[in-house]
Amino acid sequence: MIHIVRYYLSEHPCVVNFRWSHSQSWGNTWFFLFTSIAAYVIFSLFLHLFLCLLFRNRSPLPLGPIPAVHSLSMVLISLTIFTGILLSAAAEIRETRWFWRRNKTTTFQWLLCFPLGTRPSGRVFFWSYIFYLSRFLHTLRTFFSILRRRRLSFFQLFNHSILIFMSFLWLEFSQSFQVLAILFTTFLYSVVYGYRFWTAIGLPSASFPFVVSCRILLLGCNVVCHVGVLLLHFMKGGCNGIGAWVFNSVLNAAILFLFLNFYVKVHLKNRNGVKDTEMLDSLKNKDS
Image 1 (cartoon, one colour):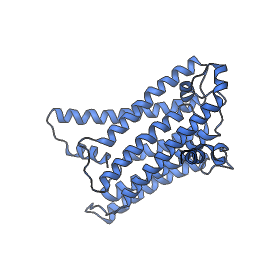
Image 2: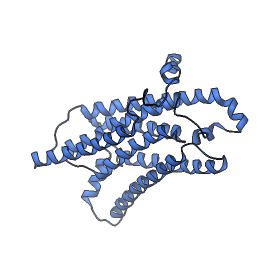
Image 3: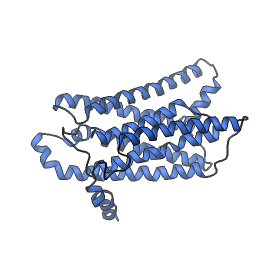
């Protein structure tokens, strides 16, 4: 069974021979990227305004088992990507270790800093491509929020759009650090969507904002690893895709700042004994 899983996730010809190109990869053009993000934002705004005009009492629409099915599907997809890129990275390390010894490069350095000239092809980039496509499935959470709560969060639109954009940059510029980023993200997303599935089927939720805490943990890990990439870039003579990495770092830092700022405001309100129902409801909604 283990050999079958390893073959299909890291040794199958579709995985080994993958190449990020216009002829072999769907959705790999800048035109597709911008039009898909624009369509996501426009349709979200249209759905929100349409429901606000149609249902002025803001009563939620029943979605039945759809959110639970979506959460369970995202758990399975995230675990598949996590396992696939883990096995693929191990295979790449095993096959190229002899070359690294000549350049005095360790496994950890390769995970943080791709050598200059790295092209988006092979096992690791196949799973980076699957991760990029999975980002579009995450956007369904926006429509669930609109249908159930009649709320459209600017941060949610911004967050999903930027994550799709960053995933595209990883492939387009063979950005360093993406292997660890995908491992961290898919692992925590499998936990987050498992928790969402748990609560969607009626089981008790956590006594603290579980999802927001996981996101802050993920962003914190990413920021720490970005520091490692910066150090290796100057110590090892350069990392591939450093321009895309700079853009990625700024966005991760900005999103982390927004989350931490929100957390601090909530805790200060609670510490001073001031009740802010809207803020607490917003924090609760981020976990659903």
